[in-house]
Image (cartoon, rainbow, N blue to C red; front, side, top):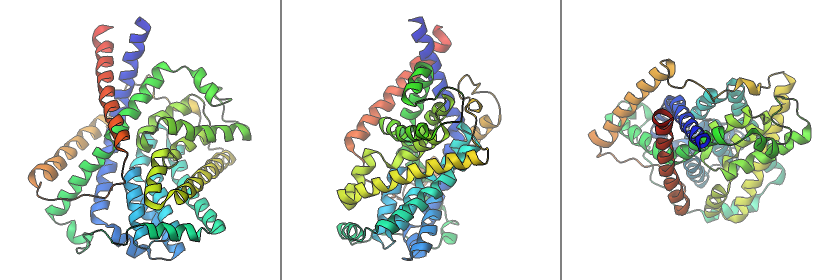
Length: 406
């Protein structure tokens, strides 16, 4: 019993430390994302992208880079761009970039995993897009694309593009919309992040290394020199682990750091991070938008690209002797709450967040701004909500045990 209480307290403390480490990064990323989504509309994006494939892919990747990291927001924006005339591969480039190349994800990865994984995330995101583009060119699924377009509603959504971003940025109304979008960003991810960070803390405290050594073969030996088939097994198992713990790319980063610290290969961890678009909830939403045939084609496209990108990153980094050392990632047994740059950044962004909440939801609550979201499963959302509340009870109890019982 004493051992359980000790691990419970350690799990809760580790999770709280993860939240504290990442708080300012979430806030900074969502402020930037909210500004982009308010001041740069989807209609303007599509007009700039045009219908040309090469230009559209490049601009789709760029607009994804400056977009939201939420998978469900990305799915809705992708559907909207495709419906308004963007090419299929340009839309896929936007989808991949908006879940892999976004600013806030890079910041979170840098905190938990280090610069090699940030480089891997951005270079890998580009490789994902290039492989997808190549596969679409080879397979040329014209009939599937045509049927998907016919399935979508022909009417465009209303889009406030009457003002340029230069005019919007000078108005209080524009910033009130930014504040409301900022609140929406947190509303979209709070359940996923709560569950994801709590799971990471529990895994860190309770799950023995032998479990990871069984799940990911030849891991846990402090080596980066893996054989080809070992790397392939890690790449395939990574998405399976992501499927079983589907909590979104942002919530999965602490768990990715734990996997790497337990000896999982660089390729396997990158595959785990890339896997947020190859899970069942995403498959179901794409089927709702485009039909099941197209949904399975997108799944095949993304999973194949994921395997290729993870392999390319691993062997490319190995070629230049850049593979990170698992021992360099130490997110357990850390002094999370000391007075350092993290403390001051958190204080600054808590103040900014407080002002944005005041502006968007109190001072200018007459302003209405709502980005389209993909239709989530009500059962899944309700389950995640109850799990999140259970996590808060778990964390509170664990912190009490750690600081007042033991």
